[in-house]
Length: 299
Image 1 (cartoon, helix red, strand yellow):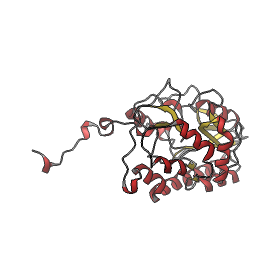
Image 2 (tube, rainbow, N blue to C red; image 1 turned 45 degrees about the vertical axis):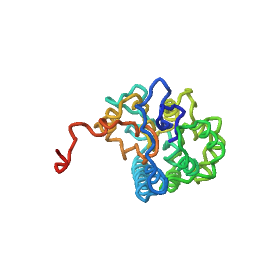
Image 3 (tube, helix red, strand yellow; image 1 turned 180 degrees about the vertical axis):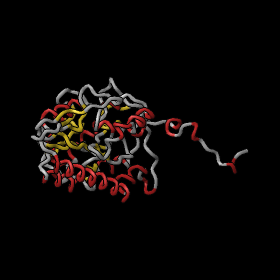
Image 4 (spheres, rainbow, N blue to C red; image 1 turned 60 degrees about the vertical axis):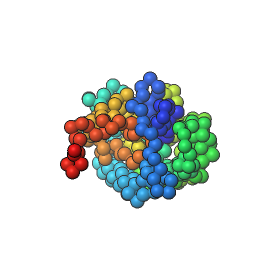
């Protein structure tokens, strides 16, 4: 998920799924202190660990299996209604409702950064720097970093399998529309393309001029039956999470209907490096009722 230009002082940039300034998330946490080798722990995990590779491959394996099972029984001309995994415009987190597919062809919609692409060149440079988010430097990365990326483990095989099933792969990212050609080149370099802006690639501001992705998702759902979505931030699935506190986001993500969507149309990739998942305070992360003190250390 791309880091957004919406910056809260002293924190990381918000992810590309964050909506415009009128609906902000809780402040993101500061970057983790560098660990062994001078690499922040979150970067070590996401870009260097076998565990993160396994989680990513696991998510993509589950996505392909779920889509294959659906495609085997999905009949656009059958008697049973087909539903997209994109929420309807009037849906809420409390009362989710999904868009109808009719006889539209199938598609899968993915975020790009840290969902399909690992921005190794940018993050490697960032690991050596101090200071906050620099939107101009990210823009230069978009323009020049197309050959310094790698596909997320499992993503390449998943994209190939989906296309072999006749499912159109669509990219929905908050990279800049001005850099569409370079984003297409990055996806192609990683083997994930083809991607064509306005057809299978949607960028920040497309459709409704907003950084929130619901407008683009709705436009995609007008043309396709979206059978799966993948992302590394909750906003890659719906903008309804925007504006909630971290405890509210956590509760909503695990609520009965929304919680039932994970691995059943919605698939999350790990990202401990940046984004809307890093905003909780100590009290929000560790509620007072859960506090424990080592009896040996009590005075």
